[in-house]
Length: 265
Image 1 (cartoon, rainbow, N blue to C red):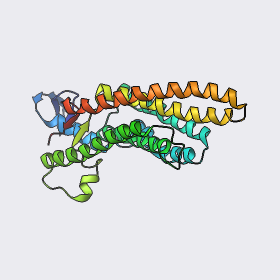
Image 2: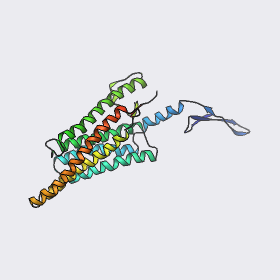
Image 3: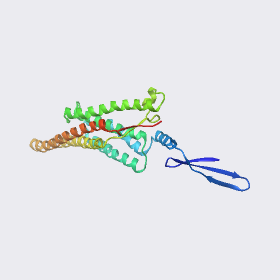
Image 4: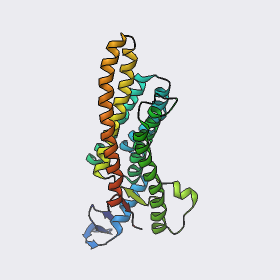
């Protein structure tokens, strides 16, 4: 009986068992250097590793996004802030757990940036456009949204290009089935990670400002105007900083060679 036991390296160690009725069993072990098989095994694991803890946390972030928008638009700011804070914390946790416990997957490389983009786009729209509070200036909102739209269009192109390289045929259903037909890994640039972090602080601070404004509306007008103006000034400065990092982040994808990696056949 021939047993194949894959190792972590690119070496497979097949074990040959010879069974004899009288003499019991003897074990003969040999090593074969087989290239390419390990990568196929890894790709199979990546295809099936969808419902891992990091991916589940990421999916909950995606599920929270419409509720955050709803609460902002209906001026229920406390639950909006709570869900937004949860989304920010789990954005850190899912990556940490995936790295520490080696739970990285192709699905995770797609779901994680998708969850970030949905959260940033939806929250920005809710805070910048009517019927929302229109707290974020339109130029800054345009930069945030424009960058993510361009990255989304680029992702669609790279998805098609990578599938043409990896699979013989492409159908409409297989194109959108990232879990069973992985074709590329997405790796955010370092400045993009910083930019996402700063955007989260900026948007979260915006929700806190709205809560503070609601509380201050109960006080005298002079007290309200002075304290709220200070917060508004800090928020404006933060907006300029976020706008600058957004431009740098978008540019980093143009010059980065490791942002998108096509999977081999």
